[in-house]
Length: 361
Ligand SMILES: Cc1cc2nc3c(=O)[nH]c(=O)nc-3n(C[C@H](O)[C@H](O)[C@H](O)COP(=O)(O)OP(=O)(O)OC[C@H]3O[C@@H](n4cnc5c(N)ncnc54)[C@H](O)[C@@H]3O)c2cc1C
Image (tube, rainbow, N blue to C red):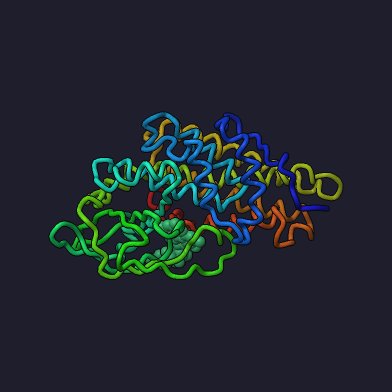
């Protein structure tokens, strides 16, 4: 039995996906194996999406009403190639951050390039979420100097760390004071570490950064109200992360269905239960995306956690029904299993999601 899937199988059922994606979907699927093994990185995919003007859908906060389309776009790309979808998520979030700070000189300068995919965006905001939740302080220190800030400290993980990428990160100004700033990976004092070998997502330029005396002009300070900023971007952040989960899960479930005959009929109930949970995730995802401000923080966190669980279980079921063929490292089913393993460690991690949800219980 083959664990390979044809491009035709990638024509997913996601109803209402942006029409522009139809000709792109096969392209992402065709390149997925090369991207997975790092022979090709995710930048050409971003540029392709930029040419179709879909990188900024719904930014910021669904102001243009197109956030559901952004959800469907990410779902569809995740179904074809999670590495490309993850890079897209990061790019889209950087556009969100800069649109929320559209007054800043930096935003005005880089937003056109980010929207067109000529510039790459990197979100290093995991520590912002941890800080605002009271888990751990932002590790990058900033001191005020004439005309801006000087930064020192580590970014433990970030993706899309390609040369010249625009990085958005939180900084600690001392005491309770925080800011969110943007810089470029090519700025003086920014050291991007060599990318480690990963289980998947190796084409996303994911690694660590050390900042040593990096000067950031005041036009690059997006806000000094970190909790307020997080509150504004968090719905989009969590919804588009859930779209990664939902797209991946949907594709694995489409791989399961044709393999439920014969002996594998014993998995039919598991598959049906996962289909129902996937439908619940998608239903809530699209409802909240249409009106993000109406969903409570707990509902958004719960959705993100449910999405990661469904994706993890669906990808595991897919390799199970594929048998030995699913254990081949290069097969799409195996790739999806490895891709899904990222979802519980993506910030907010499963631990953080459960811990935060326990506070709402
Ligand atoms: C491939 C890859 C790409 C990434 N890309 C990005 C990116 O683009 N942008 C970005 O911002 N981040 C990125 N990250 C980071 C990611 O979002 C998470 O922040 C990171 O994976 C969490 O791992 P950690 O080891 O830093 O976790 P930690 O937060 O150190 O947690 C490690 C473990 O300890 C637990 N833990 C956490 N806090 C506590 C505590 N106070 N007490 C006890 N236990 C605790 C956690 O639940 C977890 O089980 C990336 C990570 C990876 C692996």
